[in-house]
Image (cartoon, rainbow, N blue to C red; front, side, top):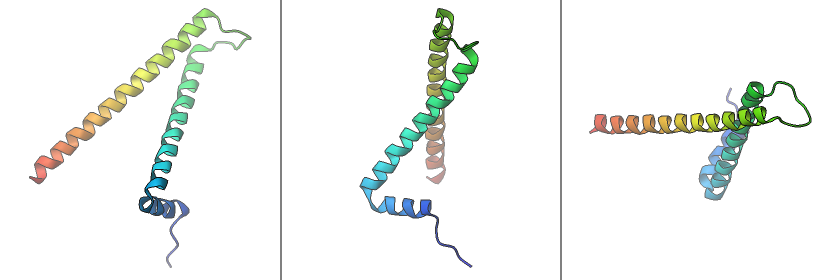
Length: 99
């Protein structure tokens, strides 16, 4: 017994046929990834820096949040750059193997 493709699969098939839709889906996916990253960063930095919530941040907590966010961004950028380098080197390796 065969089943119909899922809505997601059908959407992706349609997206390849319509460049505007494909671009829209790509932008929405990027927005979703960004929101997930912000959520993750907020969670990590909150756990690390916030001792006891109050009506106002003290300077130590504020500095901790700033440093945490900066380190999180630096680390994320480093990982992204490293993954891109790995992909490029794998692509170069694959190209030399097929030659």
